[in-house]
Picture: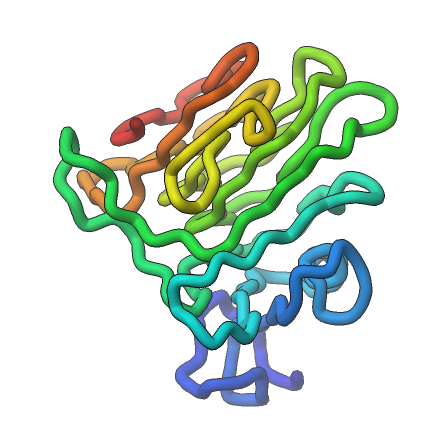
Length: 231
């Protein structure tokens, strides 16, 4: 891993000296341990610069959904720039239907986060004091009530220029929902200049579907954030 990390995804298939963006792979659905989402986030936090996380979980059928159940403690807070790309998973595709039509995204990675965070607030996936990150192509659900700030995805602190796009929040990957898939809140930010959906140019691939929240679907506490092109 001797390359200069300049935030541009390399052209080779694996991580090597020709890849200037650190590519880290989630290869199983375990809550912890080698090549789990928890370990990969932990490793990404230690690598300066923009990191790319893909999902290389082997499945024989492209329609198979991989569910990562967070069962021991909340996932690590993301503290360094990262692209978490659920659409890297086998069989997944972003939405291509126009706004107002049925969203046809094919999501293959679910993050089921039914762990109440000790001390109060956040759950699911959390970015704090981090810039220029993207979370896309994930189904995030099951975050329980543990204070008013419990959310599927949170953007906190001084974080800026981060995007949540092409995700299902409070729904399973197949677009259905029930009591077990509820998040207490869907997506929330108290930071400035972040985006939920598309930013300037309309892009149907970035539409989020946010539903089935106990309290609020979206909460905005900072300035100049954009919420556009969501269901």
